[in-house]
Image 1: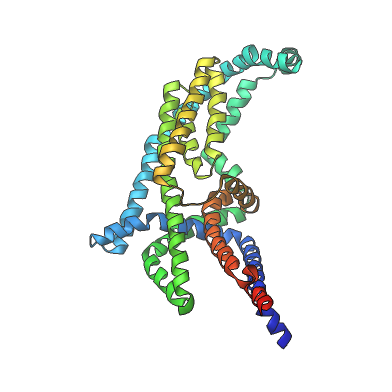
Image 2: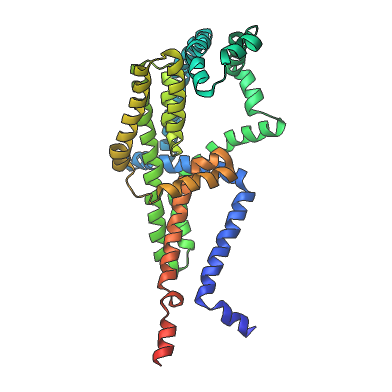
Length: 373
């Protein structure tokens, strides 16, 4: 028994148990990922809007009333989207569907000859032999109409079974409720958590807590504002270039930027494809590339450095790997939380590495004393 205690006291064992704890924590997170996803979303909502509620509270507005005002503001924004943006988007999609026959003709007359020359496959002959009697335009319009039908979309895409319906409804109810109570008690919760930490570790814990707060606030609030700006820049630029579905592509590409690199990939691909079908010329294609180039240059050199800064502290390669790992285990929602969650883990990892490097196990103080003695 004494030998076991002596082994456990060795400096290297602390690091071993730290790594083991991280592994067990990862297993626990994976096993409870569905519950934790709802909690994370509620936490992020509360965390993003906590400064707004605090600002109201400093003006002597009761905290519950301040939260209610924030909820009402979000509701008004939702109504704005439904009553103004949704009809505009529906109109754009309706116009796009009417252009499908012309787009198919563009593909046949402009794109297929280019593909023929590159691949040495006569697609026009294949089209004439196998697809000339098929009403592709009608099929696409009918299929798109089904996609646009809210009832069909919700039944076939979102609700794949009774269990999914129940989980979906529960999340819709639970997430706002949890977010409300987190907003209401978040300050007291912070104080309570600090009080539970042993006095000998409290100073280090508060320092780590403040660093995590800075990292999360920089990313979540800053990145959300960056998404708004990028959505506006993309939308205006694509409207000027006369890209079909400019509003849809602009907003989707802008807000998809919450997942690094996703917004650019989705935006450039869809914008180039639709521009190629609507305006099969080099000028418009260069215009689309120019819009995204200018937007990304502004985002990388001006917007993000000023709003988010370098406080997240993650290398681009680490960001890509984090997106792959979190996406693999938790799907799209995992990609949403990949960067902030990895940034938080990075705070603990840096502190653990610093303690490890300062330990006698690494510095070899005991070895030097043994040699000199």
